Length: 511
Ligand SMILES: Cc1cc2nc3c(=O)[nH]c(=O)nc-3n(C[C@H](O)[C@H](O)[C@H](O)COP(=O)(O)OP(=O)(O)OC[C@H]3O[C@@H](n4cnc5c(N)ncnc54)[C@H](O)[C@@H]3O)c2cc1C
Image 1 (tube, rainbow, N blue to C red):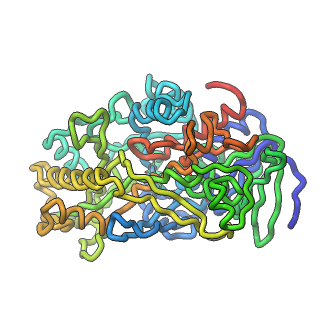
Image 2 (cartoon, rainbow, N blue to C red; image 1 turned 120 degrees about the horizontal axis):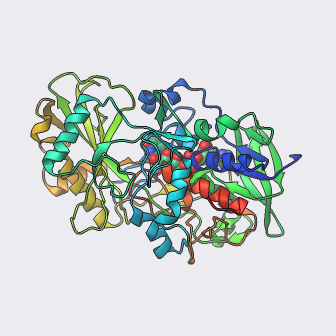
Image 3 (cartoon, rainbow, N blue to C red; image 1 turned 30 degrees about the vertical axis):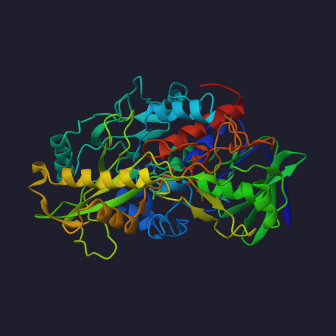
């Protein structure tokens, strides 16, 4: 083992959505930071071309996790791509910028003990990171590093889909990142001049030359070094060699919902009995580490088109809508997503690109909770991942409703000029039970895994509302893993917001 003697103020583990935001703010504030990333540079051209999103899955830039067989979903195993590159998952995500519903954040504060995280308290941080093309407003910022742009040239089949939503009764909503999220709109995107803007390109690349910043790629953090109850650095594996790196201030884990929980467990921070069973010494008995794993789900509804669909000008996801399965709900529980290409379906032949389109039926208020656990003490072995989809029957019922609603929208007059026939689920699948069987076979992740290092109070809380790990001084977690209950929407913007807040906690300031 080689001991590195250089001392940084801070070590940030993981150059993803949140880690890049923390790093940038700390460097700007004059702190020296070591940013450690297990993936490499973002030099795959497909990262930067929004239209090539799906090429990145199972690429060298993807951790490409797979879940345990889902016992409430016909033992289906769900692919979980996760970024393994500078930018993390923001380098291979769908570039959709969505914050969620105000009640999500109020719920974190009220129900989970995450004091200080109500919507009014987090809104300034969303605004601080944002450079919205419409300019500043009560809900938007325009001076931040993260560009958020509109789509001014939608695919014509996307426009027809939006008209079909309105025909069905879903209102047009010009801005789902403002007061009201309900309704259909063209997606806000983290794209500028036709190129993806990841958290790395937005936050860290502009300060890459700073003498206060050191970036180490290809370095897998294997554990946090804890001395006398305080985190003092990390151990990492790079080029087959183990090194230790120390810092004078906080160690910040931003390795994501899977990576941060895995590092805590490998460091002996987690459920004591499980750690001992793997031969890992216990540093802090925190039963909540790895628990509360959950995600949003999707399933494709695919149509063949009567005429050619143009390739489009940007990413292949252009519109979505928020709706409620029950008008009495206080917030939407559905967020279906339109793609002007036909997506693959298990056991069915779908048309080639240009000859079909898909609406991904998706739900956003799951109640099912699962967990992550270590298979062994080997840091190179991926942990086991079980989101326990549909353990709560209402989650399956909501997905069935989502499919039915999407089909209804797909059969509206506004799509007559495009629709030839429904390919999947297909005309033979009508009863609720048949729809449920279809979607279990074709269960997709919305890629919004959260919750394994839950923030707040109570026996399963892992970090306090200032993101400090209970029982270990000088150690924080800042990424999607701290989210107690997933937001109603996509999770990149919330992860960036969490990174922004973490930097303020470390610096002791306010926006
Ligand atoms: C395919 C896909 C599509 C998505 N689409 C959207 C979308 O359109 N809009 C949206 O809002 N959200 C989307 N998401 C979700 C969103 O991108 C994530 O929720 C968000 O990026 C999570 O940020 P994070 O900071 O928690 O983790 P990440 O961005 O995943 O960053 C974690 C980083 O830590 C690194 N790391 C992990 N373990 C270690 C270790 N031991 N040592 C060193 N480094 C380590 C990883 O390699 C990674 O770079 C998508 C996600 C995926 C995967």
